[in-house]
Length: 188
Ligand SMILES: Nc1nc2c(ncn2[C@@H]2O[C@H](COP(=O)(O)OP(=O)(O)OP(=O)(O)O)[C@@H](O)[C@H]2O)c(=O)[nH]1
Ligand SMILES: [Mg+2]
Image (cartoon, rainbow, N blue to C red; front, side):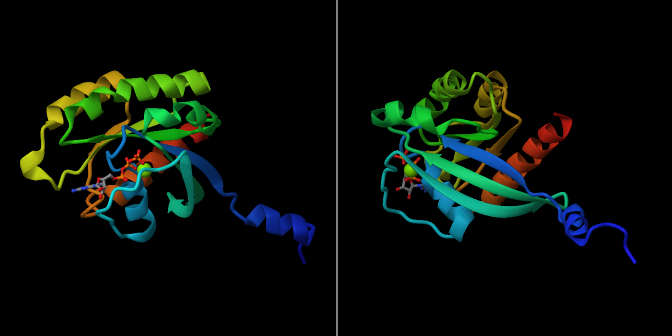
């Protein structure tokens, strides 16, 4: 017979889920929403529908046998939304810095995105650099070396070349960032 109260026992046995808030940041049309849709539904849409404000998506993951509730905040890239965006950063653990490999200016502007993040949070979350649209091989204008130089300056934990269209490295990016946040939470 167990001497522990059954209610307390079941609480002890139940593994607590870790909640992670992930922001998806980057200029308009780099493929932020497409990346989230690919991760959420394994699908892709060619038509561009700019995000208005933000869209939130939640998914449960298992990383290192730990349960994670991943809250993904897909923010609008347009400067028209910079005013409302400020309110969406609160308590973020991580951010994807997304650029379009066919448009070098979208990589350059990621510095501005980290500045906006720091202004809202007063700390830097775990950043992962996503070079999206790697499927557009003939139109590609950003090299891996350029991603590495920028990634170092932006202090990202990883660089991923991905494609929301084909799905290449999309799931990996989400699992990788979750793993880094989990490791960081373990040390706090
Ligand atoms: N070829 C290719 N096209 C992509 C890829 N990802 C996104 N696109 C296209 O790029 C366009 C913009 O994609 P979105 O995901 O809406 O861009 P966004 O970054 O969410 O844009 P905002 O919401 O305005 O900030 C759409 O026409 C997509 O179909 C990709 O990996 N490869
Ligand atoms: Mg969008």
